[in-house]
Every structure is written in structure tokens, then in C-alpha cells.
Length: 138
Image (cartoon, rainbow, N blue to C red; front, side):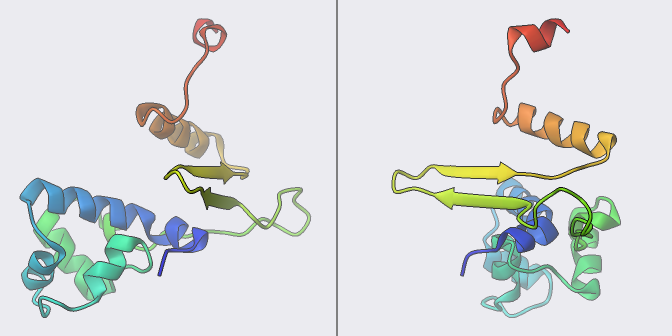
């Protein structure tokens, strides 16, 4: 089961953080389950890693104790829908995968300036958005 765009918006940051932490420690999901006091094959960590769900409050606290960081690192994000009178569409995030392993992602959202700048920096750092010479000179 793949994560929906809404699930990615809510839990994608958790999945990314967990994948990074597991890679740093060379742990498997079963190792993380064990560190959390769960059965090695418990499904929860696998769901979190796919962005389908996130940990409850007890597991959030255990993850923070294991990995540190701010409390929101493992908490579900708040995602709001556009207001009915807003000109934005209901489909804020869409993605399509083609047969050659490439994915097209489209984001149509109105964001506060500080959030938009942070998102743009993230995309630039990831090499997903490129500046042009004209934009660099501005």
C-alpha cells in the first residue's frame, strides 16, 4: 500500500527522519522495533517508514529518547485544506509515476512567505529546482 498525498503531507517528514536515523546506525526496521520494545516484525515501524502513518504519543517519546531532536520530529503535521472561497484547487499535491522510474510531482499551494522560502530552500538543496542566471543576479 503506497502512501496517499495527504498521508505524505502528514507523515512524510517522520518517514524521512526514520530512514536517515536507520541508515546512520545501519539498523533495519526490525532493529528499530526492538529498540522501541516492540516485536521485531511488528508492522508499525514499516508503516511509518512508508509514510502511511505515524507513531502515537508513547512511541514518539521513545523515538525522541533514542534519536533526540525537537518534539515535532515524530509528530503528525497539521495540514489544512484551502478555504472554499480560495482560488486554490482541492488537489494540492499530485504525483504520477511513469514506467521508466521517474515521478512527476506537482504542488499547487498558497503558503506563508516563511514556509514557502523554507520549502524552496529544501528543493534547491535537493537539486530538484534550479536557479537561472537571471534569478541569481537579482
